[in-house]
Length: 375
Image (tube, rainbow, N blue to C red):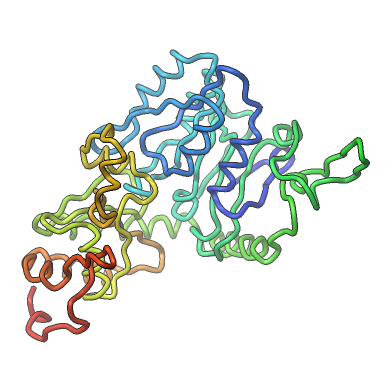
């Protein structure tokens, strides 16, 4: 990340979600303060701000890309009340990459700090926070260990030491203090004062080891390989009849799509049972963004959706590529999708909606031999 460890602190958290919530609670909010977020954010970079300050959202275009010209207008309009620009480095829905340094320079020009939710960026591309003296410096950066192949349960929030030395920690107790009397508290130094309770020692060690291992492999080399895989996947998937692929370049190895006439949840079950292919379906904790990409009225009352099974809610199918994937795996996915597209009625009968369990399930647990030869 190229953080300046003389001026920045690295606070260990459970994940990106906890890191962003910590920042939301530690920020010295005042009446009238504003956070500018975007329509493409994960819920973890949206919901925490709603309970601490006023939030305004930068719109995205029909491809799901941030409208940076509108962002600049918003920064001008709300100056000097915007305290923070909270934006993802890369979307977990479309994989779209935001130019975080351009956004940082813009935010700083109008007196705002910037937080980058790097959960989807760090696993795929080298990240440089840049020096504090640089106008495009990233003030706060959060990411999760499990996204970069470390175990679940450890992430990090990086930010200025002077910021976290102000005020009281959001969690207090063991490990956060140097001296305590009945009347006074002297907080411990950083990062201890922000890491209450017994630390996740094993998680911290494995997170550090994983980052070192990725650096040894060469993040630039991994990024180039993933970019090649992504371009190949986009090429072969786009040739499948009835497919819609969402988002645009530049993107990391995240691709979302739908196949006409087949609900996303049903398609995910088919891919799992027929090909052993693991995908995720739904809205990926970014419901507003997905509805925007699907051109669905976001003003529809939530009570309407509660009357419908989540399996039938609007959504997409997502594949996430990494350095361990191969072109052959992508080709196998494309082949199965083409087979499904050409035999939609058959697969829909084979994987009906189970009203008791409220999900799509196969009616049989084996493949018909004659289906294996369909292309």
